[in-house]
Image (cartoon, rainbow, N blue to C red; front, side):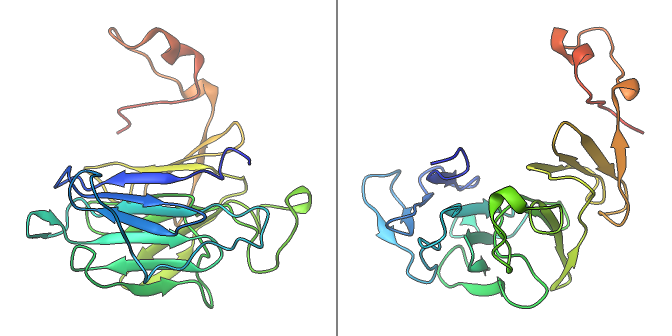
Length: 219
């Protein structure tokens, strides 16, 4: 299997005893006792086992959502080639929010902003099933935003694999692609590439900072 095809684990940021594990064979598993016992989350389908580029199941939390019984209230689960599900009651029930129409089929990397906006990268084959060797930025590495119950494709001219959001500014988003780093200051409506000439170091930075194309503490 390639590096993306692996089981994925996520721990509830509000309750360390709540653990989710996404698997290819058993689907989404959940534990409420720190892993002593497990149950299957049957609402989330198995990832597409017939696709050799299947990427399993990914789980991510809205850390700023309301707590329910001490647990994070809003949770997302993405099953490869099937879409994304959202729970607003700490995992008691799930609603499919993506996977048909103009929406992503998966979330290989995702983050929820402080205002609840979801930003994600979908690196699956896409609805056309284009082979890995023939993929382009249109079928691999699409970037999506979910805000006000609507999906918007905010992709860049790259194949991004990682995404993160400024915890103090839900519109400041960063992507890392094939050797490039991108930044948006308006929620993904526009992107600017951050080149090596934008590196800014200061006293106390880790030694390797000067060798990267990252720039931190941007105004």
